[in-house]
Image (cartoon, rainbow, N blue to C red; front, top):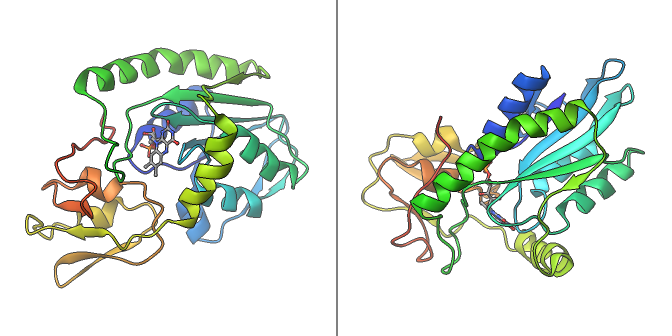
Length: 251
Ligand SMILES: Cc1cc2nc3c(=O)[nH]c(=O)nc-3n(C[C@H](O)[C@H](O)[C@H](O)COP(=O)(O)O)c2cc1C
């Protein structure tokens, strides 16, 4: 069984590819959480996977919250995570491992896949250039069969990029990021045509159209789906996103 979360499609693609290659069931974490589905039965010898993007060098808070509430019947034969990131993951695997440990479970393996960056809410951050985007996507496609094989063979490895100062990034900057999550700066410009795409793509169902314009309802995780999928490029995050590009995974 693979539990996954994705805002802009990178992690969804990885999760879908792995589920197809490994013939495993996929569960979308935000939907399961909304429906109060935290109880799952594992077959004899079944593995347990988590696929998600890195947010500020941590697993997204909603992923850790879900894992904290997960109740499994049956013991997983192998537990792994696959994170996607623009650059590096810090100590994100340690955070997931600690949350699993509270349930008497341990991560056997942690893998990382570099994918195009989606974070644009800070003035110095932008999407990757077209060349970097293509290079990352091509490399990820090459990695997927190898990743599936490692999981099939139940290899106990950590294959992800931690980057520089991983503890500071995960435990200091990451904690600050989670404390400051707010959707108050998101807004739609006059280019908005009320198409409702932002409502559709928000994984947390946090957006509704009010008088034809998107309104955010305070449960945002800054996944950037509303910003990147908007066909009019009408969504902005204060001044931070002005003049920046859009990217989301597309097949
Ligand atoms: C809120 C947010 C925080 C991010 N933080 C990091 C980070 O700490 N390190 C990193 O390398 N990439 C970071 N990224 C980039 C994403 O991890 C990366 O683009 C990921 O593949 C997006 O996955 P998705 O398309 O499934 O949402 C961040 C993206 C977002 C939206």
